[in-house]
Length: 80
Image 1 (cartoon, rainbow, N blue to C red):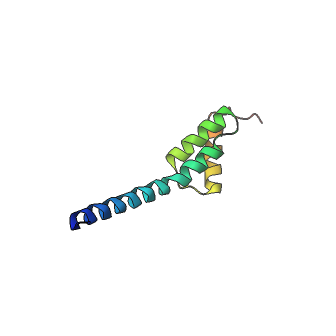
Image 2: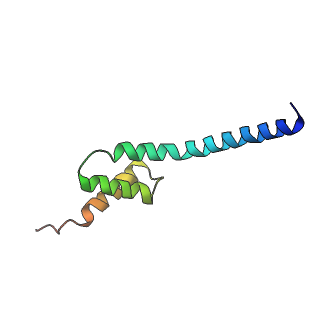
Image 3: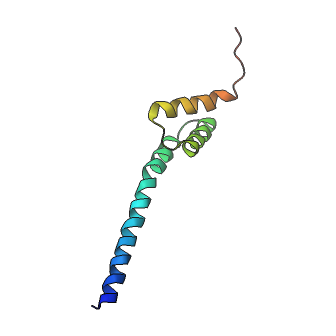
């Protein structure tokens, strides 16, 4: 194998590793949002997808508050 072939092979290998690493970085958020947002009412699923789209790095409690705020945004005011 010549020196040019070794360089090309090395660059191809490095590029493959870099692409796989970048794909792996996006996977957890996509998987988590896909599982969590698959169940519930239509409004909940919509609010859940919007929450993951706007704030992909929220923790569990912050995500819950964000979804609850979206769910209650269009709710009519409660009577006393």
